[in-house]
Structure formats: structure tokens, C-alpha cells
Image 1 (cartoon, rainbow, N blue to C red):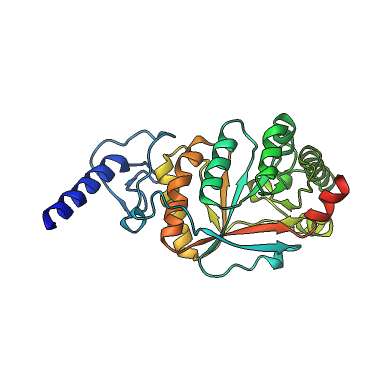
Image 2 (cartoon, rainbow, N blue to C red; image 1 turned 90 degrees about the horizontal axis):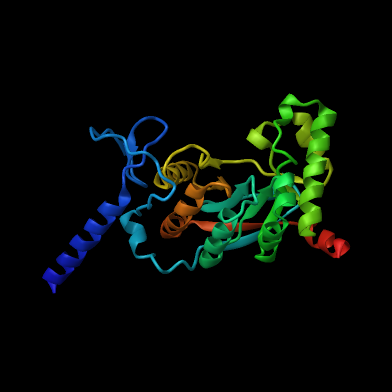
Length: 281
């Protein structure tokens, strides 16, 4: 019996070592997923969106058992309503919807039984209305991210407001649900614009954990950075994007790791969303 256990452990270790890879980080070092970065003398590996993501030992037993990750639902009418407990996270996806990638992410979220908030760019929602509608049909919350992902700090106040309104109207008209949440592109806000957004029935979603999945690194590097930041914060809103293949590739491992470490994914619901949906219908 003891020999069989040792053989099984050796097989698992061999399998994971072959899958882990050595993702390159923007700092120029190589790192094993979910482990501290180490300087290695071997050549740097070119990041690939298809690279597999390894798990820490605590997560091995969760493979094939994605349940238990879903947490509570928060009804939100203002930023002050988003009060997360220790080891609670909110998943948010910006910039979509995007063919194939958004659908893949929806399938993964469904498998793990968790809900996210999708901050859609207005022109993307207009270009892919059927995908935007599938996001809503799957029970996820939605918000807007301006119409064309403009840097609002570089616009006049009136032009910035017009960009926000156009984006919200585009997402709402496509999904038939009020885009009650909002995120500033590049997180570039101003006090005056934040005040305007709040006064006009939207909730600004800030970011505590930036996955930086927009960098040209491997999925494993994205997962490593996200978990490291989250461990430092203990909770928070996680920024992801549903337009990158690397995000979809690393998401199952990230969610498995979250569950293994005792995190819960909180669902946000805009408190005015149900009334707006009824009015639109």
C-alpha cells in the first residue's frame, strides 16, 4: 500500500511539473504558477495563451469538484454598498463582448457556479448583441465601459459625459437590462465625473486586484499575479478582461485555486436592475 501511494504521488508530481511551464513575467524573471518567482538560467519561454496553468498542492483535490465557490449576492445601489468580508471576491470582466472568448468564459463560470459582472464597451455590445444577451441570460450582472473605451481624463467634461451616456444606452438597448455598473477605462476618473456617474444611477466599480491580463504573458503568469495580489489584500474586486485568450485559459485554474484557499465569489446585483428590466419589457 505504501509503495502504491508513493508511486501515485510521484506520477502526480511528474504530471504537474510537465504542465507548469515557466511563464515569463514583465519583470524579466520566470515563475512557477502560484509560487514565488525564481531566477533561472534557462532561456526565457515565449508566453502563449494556450499554456497550461499548474495548481498548488492544496488545490489538487479540488480538480473535478468546482462546487462551493459561489458566495452571497449583494444588492448594490451605491459604491458604499460593496462591503466585502475577508476572502470574498467579485469577478469583473471589461471590454467585451468578444466572439468565442466571452462564450468560453461564460461556460467556465457556469461550470463553477459563480456569477460575474461584465463591463461592456458600447460599440462591442452593438457589434455582438447576441453575445451580450447571452451574458444576461446566464444571470450575470452588466455595466458599461463607455462607448468606445475613451480615456475620459483627456476629454472635456461634457464630452466625457456624452461618452458615458452613449455607452450605457448602447449596452442597455442591446441587453434590455439597465447597465447599472460603470468602470472608467484605464481607471482614469475625476472627482467630478465620479459624482456625475453616481448622481445618474450608476455605481462605479473600482479595482483592488488587477490581473493585468492585458500584458503579453502566459496564462500561468496572470494567475500567479492575481493570486499573489489577492493574498496580499485578502479580498476585493478583481479586474479581468473577456477579450483575451490567456484569460479564458487560466480561469479554471484560478477558480479552482480560489476555492481551495477558501475564497467565495460574491455576486453583485444593481438594485435598480429589476425595475429597469420590467420597464423595458
